Image 1: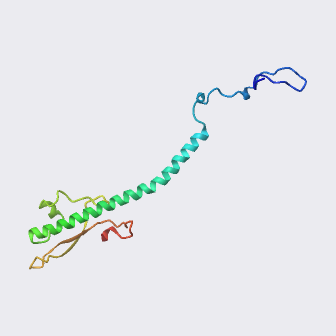
Image 2 (image 1 turned 180 degrees about the vertical axis):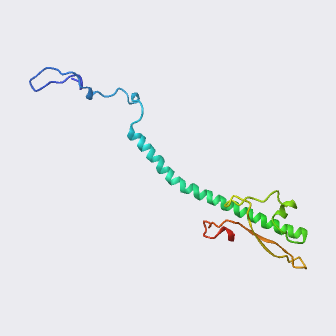
Image 3 (image 1 turned 90 degrees about the horizontal axis):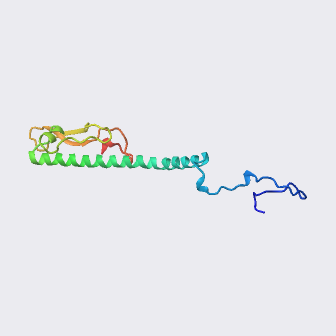
Length: 155
């Protein structure tokens, strides 16, 4: 006798009982439709764990990218200040002079402030005989601290 076809009531009773619906095995596991709540909770938990791992790394990557842009912008502006001084024989009076004299198309946006608000360091022009002042250096206007622990305003 195969399981589920019928059962007897006792050791001497030969009366068959109808097959029990609990003993039936599904024909195919592919016929079950949908997901159980437990399966959905497990998948959502895995996604949350992966997001919790990835988010700090994403933020760190964005921070390093902004720092790289800031380094590059500062390097280029400082090089253009030197080039301007070499070409004109004097220091520019502002960063806008680099734009008006076509040394750059426009001032770059500070990646940390989101604006074109650079801190300009002025000093005495070494090429001037009358002691004129000019832009000798440029820094970020951000008050944030870098991943290295130094303020961006000191870069």
